[in-house]
Image (cartoon, rainbow, N blue to C red; front, side, top):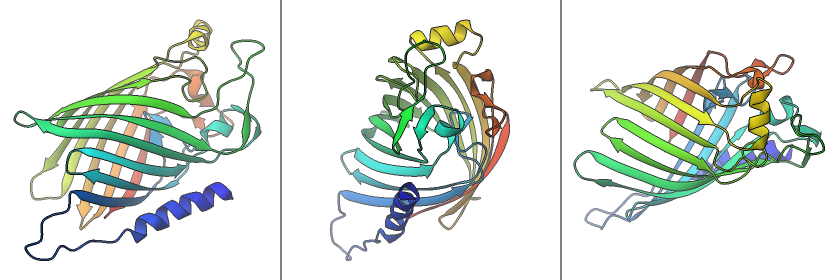
Length: 270
């Protein structure tokens, strides 16, 4: 399939990123290129399964400048759009995110990160009818967000703000996600302990009508994780749970996508 070929191309490109050795005494380049490739038993985004609790193969390419500017692209297979019934005709099986931003430090042990991300869902498809507003359709899944984060040592607070339609929900400008993340390295072990809590808040008429029907898409998610770096190969284990309503339940297509679940991952960055 075209989308599988595109994801494979992205991952092969990541594997092909060369290491640039600097001659002794030469000034360091302000440009840095990195890549990553990974496998996971379950692709979870903000607490919700994106592959109906099935495995995913993922990869990305990143550029960073010494000034703090960065940009990148990241891809993964997905199935949630079709499995949720949001597609009337056609198909979409790949997510390809593009992003750019600026990050730097300030004061002692503080840093910030601001940027823009577009979640692109590749495929040719027609959106299904909106079950909450007669005579209208759901939106295409492509979504734009701006975000800002402040970190202190191992603790990060981040806010993401939707600029328009949000993941098939039409007229959802202002939909937002607030999260707190802790990432604590255990000295000299290569092990990192992680903890996360986030709240996804949907806006708009469709959201109001869904909420009135008892299937509000707004929810809170939680995650604890453990990872270890083996010379550039990171093995991770994470457990995620949410209080998501039946809005995220499709029993014939992967079950409850917001239920508590564990995921094992292997990632190589270089």
